[in-house]
Each structure stands twice: as structure tokens, then as C-alpha cells.
Length: 140
Image (cartoon, rainbow, N blue to C red; front, side, top):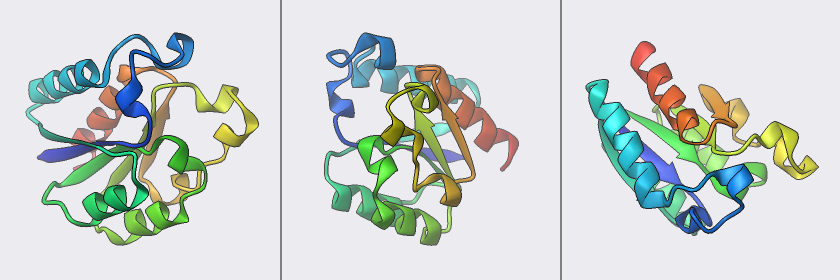
């Protein structure tokens, strides 16, 4: 199994963002931790980060992976275009968030992606990504 791990806008700034919400890892450190976790489960990973909605949509709809773990950042709350891409990509997509989006600002409690994703994991920093990988492995 090969999983595409995608990160959206401002996630390239991890390590510089609010520690209480996002932790202290940089994106590179996060990717390394996720890669190692997945490898221990027999899963290959590919990583992609973009601040651009269109590039995220292109990657969702044009990749050779078996499944996608997606932290769409702020696009989670309003990008119907990304939701449409998820819905038609033909692959299981898991929504993840480092922070506890249910206990933050009101706008973060709204996700237009949740209805088209197979599952959602949040609030556990890098462990949210680990839970997404576990879900995909268990539900091949």
C-alpha cells in the first residue's frame, strides 16, 4: 500500500506556529515521523505540501497512490473545490488535523471535507496522522 500524505496552506511553517495547537515539529520532522511510522506498518509514503488550492486539487486527482491522508489546513473550512476533488478521486481520503479543531475558533469547527472523507482524526499532533495510517491499513 502506498499513501499520499498531503499538507495544505501554512503547514510549511510548522515549528514556527502556535506550539499549543501545532506542536514543535517542523514539516520535515513531521514527514519523517509519519514516514517511519508507516514503514513500520509496511506502508510506503509520498509527501506533498502546497499553499495553492489548485495544486492540491491536481495532486488529489492525479496521483498513483492507493489512499490519501490530507491536512488541508484552512481550506478544510471552505474549499468545496477540494471536497469535489476528494469525492471524484476514487480513493479513500482521511482528513487529519494536528490541533483540536473541535475546541478552537468557531470557524474551525466547520469542515466541508468531512462528508466526503472516510474518517477524520484530529487534536493529537503527529498521532493524528498515525491514526489515519492505522485506519487505512485496517480498512484496505
